[in-house]
Length: 117
Length: 110
Image 1: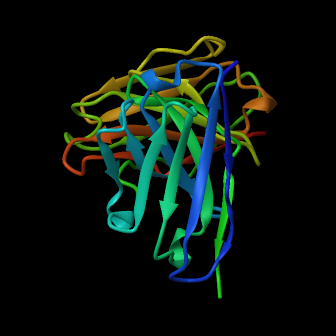
Image 2: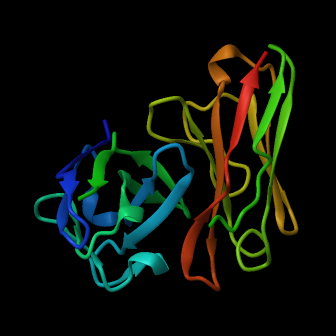
Image 3: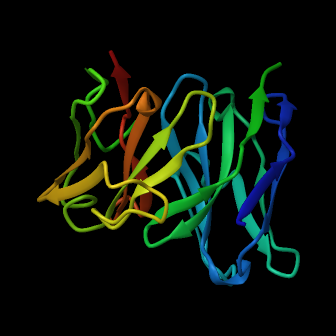
């Protein structure tokens, strides 16, 4: 069974940092693109970033470029999202998702990130 | 700011059919695959349709997808109370070099 479990969410101050993790199981992790998608309270979905199976390429939505870093450790079946320079607008539930044929076929339960002073 | 436009809400009675539209451009829907997601209240999104019209294993054939030009459509037949949810379309945008989601449609079962 495919499982994605996020951790690391919480409260950060504006301009602060948080690191999200996503532990994957139930599939050959090193063969798949992985992504982060976020959803602000009461709002729609926003893709944040994705990473190639070998970690050699990453892509980001414009609003987080230069502040967020997406990485993976295929030996530990995990991906990470380092979030620096957090803004109030970054507050959201962050979902880890598996890439599949230009879609996302499995999602984690989400990690809540709150940004407030 | 979502690049793909969907109607905010649709409603229909149980057993009826609803169609949800998703309008984009040549940068996204026009030249890339469209996928659709269902998000039940308080839950993570779930993939319903990928590559415009394919259903993942376990998704009933009441759900169907189609694409024409720069627009896509999700159809739900035999509407059930359990289908009451938010639905989002999505596609890669070759100009933005980013994945974009639709604005979302809330389906209400009367």
